[in-house]
Amino acid sequence: MKKILIITCVIAAGVFFLVGKWGGDSKLFAQTLPSNMNEAHEIKEITIYEVKPTGKPKAISLTEKEDIAKILKAGEAMELNETNDFVSSGYLLLFQGSKENYALTVNEEGNIDMNGHEEHYDIKGKNALFQAIQGMDNQWELLKEGEL
Image (tube, rainbow, N blue to C red; front, side, top):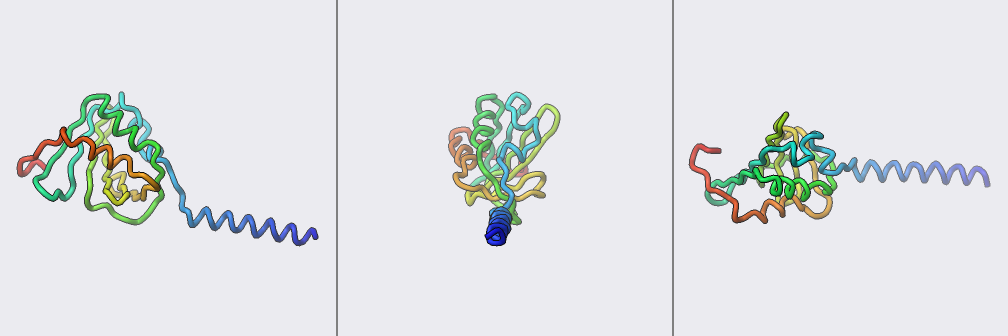
C-alpha cells in the first residue's frame, strides 16, 4: 500500500510538471514592461503608429494622463505566454518616459513583441490593448510621406 501511495505521488508530481511546461510560463502584461513604464505619471507620451497600414499611414500621440492611463489599464491584466512568433503588422507603441523609452508591437491576432522585438508573446484571452487602441478612432492623424 505504501508503494502505491509513493508511486501515485511521483506520477502526480510528474503530471503537474509536464502541464506547467506545456502551458508555458505566463506573465501579466504589466510584469513585462520596465517598472517605471507601468505608471502613467512616469510616461510623458505614447505615440502609436499603424504598422503596414491598409490605407494612408497614420499615428496617434497621447500626452494626456487619462489617455496614457487608458492604454496602460487596458493591457495591465492581459496574460501573456512566451512564443517565437514575430509581429510584423498591427500597432507600434512608443512609450516615452521621464527616464527611458520603450517600444512594443501588438497585432489583432493577439501577439505582442517587446524589448526591440527580442521578446515575443501570445495574449491569452481578450486582446484588450488592441481594442483600446482601435477605440481611439477620432484621434488618428494621417502622416505625410517620410514621417514614418
